[in-house]
Amino acid sequence: GAEQSTSTKVELRDDPVKSSSDYASGSGNAMSQGTKDNDSDSSGKVKIGFVQTANESGWRAAHTQSMKDIFSQDGYSYKFIDGQGEQSVQIAGIEELINDGYDAIILAPIVEDGWDDVLKKAQAAGIPVIIVDRKVSSDSSLYSCWVGSDFETEGKNAAKWLADNIGTSEQKNIVVLEGTTGSSAQLGRTEGFNSEISKYSSYSILASESGDFDKSKGKELMKKYLGQFDKIDVIVSQNDNMAYGVIEAIEEAGKNASDYTIVSFDGEAEAFKQMIAGKISVDIECNPLQGPTVEKLVKKLLNGETVDKEQFMEE
Ligand code: GYE
Image (cartoon, rainbow, N blue to C red; front, top):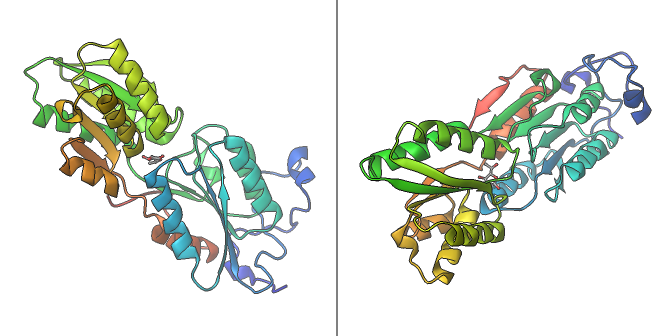
């Protein structure tokens, strides 16, 4: 196969990692620099692997497509790994990409915790890892950079919108449908919303539980809330797909979605239709089109350039 010139390597070390047992033994310094013997495929293309969370939402489908579009360009050999909603599947996918000598790994982590070991393996093999969308709680020395949205600000903006548009004079009861527990999108949106809405004594949060960013789980949760609480004024759904489930649950209960204030996140096409129909009241946008930004970063990293650790998407 074609030999890559060292100028395209991100980090260099004298002794290439030979087998996965090198990692397990702990003999290598995880912080040492690494490289691989031959990290492009036989055609000389740059090998990019993307480990996605799953396909839980419209946002996610757009995110996956954005990566696929950009890395379908000439010069790349692109592999997509579906994490199927399981961190263990994502970790196994990263290990596969390491073993197959990929040039760069893009990871959309399902949750924040639990990535240290596999990130150390990638680092020992000299493979840059770009974290996209949600964050990891690992030390930032263990990955090249992160690209994503400011979820806490999104949560704050949702609460500010309520205060500004629904007002603070009447007592309002809120139920919240959270995303996947332990994901940055759930943690940030919850924290941002709670910290801002708690400034207004007229708003009470009756319940805040996870619907896993999933339409049918969101629908089940909304059915439960409707049975549990007599007076619900505001429904905060941490993504559009759960909001669609919320609307179905309300309508199946013989009520009108437009009688509630429904706040959603993502801003996908179907949600705009639901806003025009008066069912979703406001949607906090979150930009899934990260491919072009990520590709620029991959190029820089493979050129040995340094990049900012945190990059926020334009919304
Ligand atoms: O809001 C949701 C998706 O992490 C920002 O994940 C992302 C979220 C998005 O499932 O629809």
